[in-house]
Image 1 (spheres, helix red, strand yellow):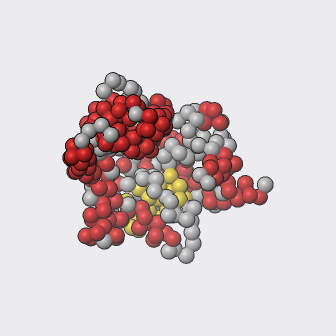
Image 2 (image 1 turned 90 degrees about the vertical axis):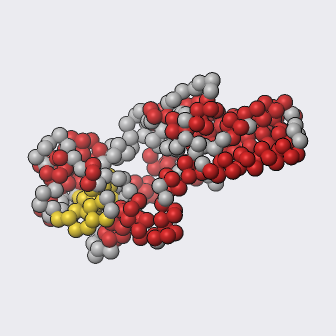
Image 3 (image 1 turned 120 degrees about the vertical axis):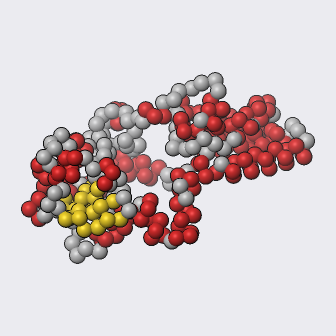
Length: 304
């Protein structure tokens, strides 16, 4: 069941796990390089469980303690689980599932399914080794400690997004944390669906297929945007708008380059939502190109 998405990606792009390992699969959708985020190449050290617990940000977008305290608190129990034939098999499987992705990329999220498999093995080994009262005290203390640091595990908890949604409602929360959603809702209500270019956050999922962005995922528009940023007059950006067929531009004010700011002189800012602005481009700047049709790879695949 899970393989269907990989099969679809393979048929669509030639790489079932795009953008990973594209130097091997050589999909024409991206450069033939094995994309890797150097932030998660912290490497292996003898005190890895300690670092995962107390210096967690080295292994993901997590604050210290956000990974929980099991790696340190139950490390000895892993040895006990290995010794007991009743728990040895699941401990072996859990170690394999946790360490295999971690060998390639020290990114904690990929190792967590294996760590979850290790829990019953370690807890079972503890129950079989120490007294029942001590087991209960250990597990209750560990659970409370993990709950105390739960908000460090995800930005939505740490920054209060869930609490704000409950207290202030969805509209206030979306305005603060995902203003592009409200902009996309505004654009979908327009009589004609036209192309919108996201130059800040690449949150185009709700643009009904008409949204595009300029980060590295897009190997056509990203180089075009980088080149346009080299022209402080903004003329190159306006030419890029025409080549993209863009009618709307979404910007994040704190990250607008001087070149893009110059290019938007003469455009109309029609909506401001939180930290996102929506600009309508003059008709003369927008070309006749329709990327929605040009890039409908699924349609091309099904018509073959």
